[in-house]
Length: 280
Image (cartoon, rainbow, N blue to C red):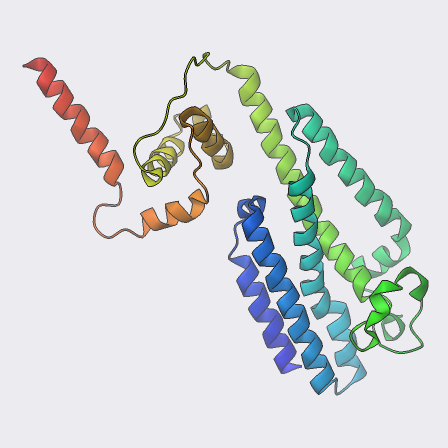
């Protein structure tokens, strides 16, 4: 089990480095899906090569360890599908779309309520049936596809993975609803001026990210009560630019040697110079 525990620990460390908001980038999700598939395969090989020295180890693996990886794989795959297919409609209709998804989750959870209770309450009475491989496994009619590899599956480890994915997805969608609510509030309180032409940001993307974080840090917009993702979208729309992974850019700014606020410093000097020239 040492090898298996090490693999699961490695996997968790790697996925924890991804910020929640980075999940909204398709490229990051594909990386996480590939990473999850890779570690699931490594676990499969380890189980085939080493097996388990006891039934308790086997139960622990299929109840507690494998579902961490397979559950996250389901989670990342679902978010990827959502981002690829979500409708480009009004904020209120986007919120309605998410609520429909959450309703479907709730309906599925209700259909598996007995096992959900068993798992949530940390029951162990039927673990020797649910999480041990072999012909004594029950409820296989609902898991036909899952039993393609009987050496790496039990009747209920996939159900645990679905519960884990469900919890992660509920949190994700609640955060999405909060963001949409924030966007709607900003939209209702502020009517932007009509722009008759496109204005382009002619400094670097890094400069704009530096300015954006400074504005947010000072509370100059909405008293600081604005999601950075929303502020970034405003900047992108206003200046016809794509900021990409601005969290990474901000990390690079923080890691600068010497003066870290290069653009802000140049703004200050340029304004002072302008005022001096106007006074002469």
